[in-house]
Length: 136
Image (cartoon, rainbow, N blue to C red; front, side):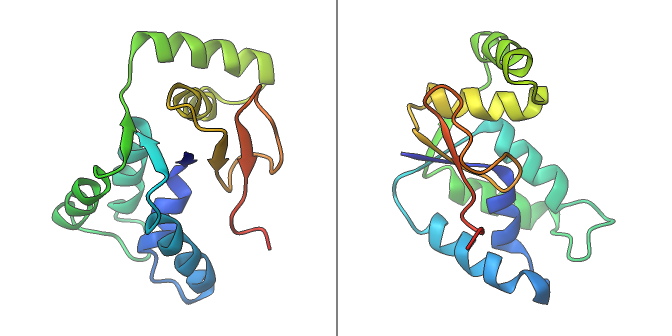
């Protein structure tokens, strides 16, 4: 299983010409069946995709429909256990709590690969390895 970070979802809906290749890569990723994500990733997508300051904001209805479609993937729920693990990971690896929560959601889903543009490519968080699918 591969865990998908928020930026993959955002590129999938981007209409920006300069992001066209990332858009295509994101769509290819989301066509796969070995994808997992978390409630946090879906929340972040909703907030960022519907931001009125965004060049191509989605309506509530559009964002909600996309989220519904992505619920076909395995989704890690938020929990107290995840919160505790993320706090510990944040301190251990000196990363933000939010990034640590993504790492720990990937771990909880038993994903060895975390697809993300935000975390350092190749970083191995004790069994969860970061791959940047846009780094060609």
